[in-house]
Image (cartoon, rainbow, N blue to C red; front, top):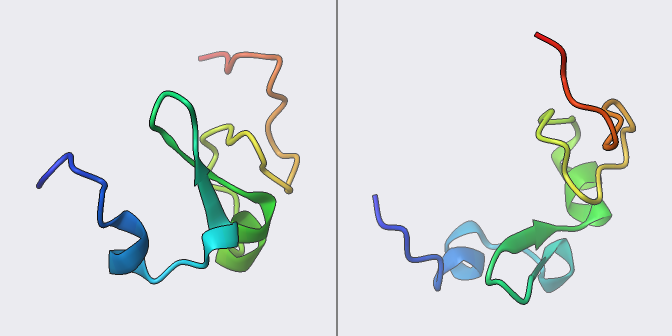
Length: 61
C-alpha cells in the first residue's frame, strides 16, 4: 500500500467539506464527515461530534 495520499479525495469521492489538510500535511476530518460516517472511531479525532472521548485525558489500561 502506498503512503502517497495525493489522490485521497478522488479515490474516496469525498466532498471538499469533509476534510482539510493541516500545515504538516495531515488529513483532518471535519465534524460534517464524522456525522456522515455515523459512528465514533475512538481515535480522539479533533472534530469528533460524539463526545465519547475526553480529549484531555489518556485511556487507562
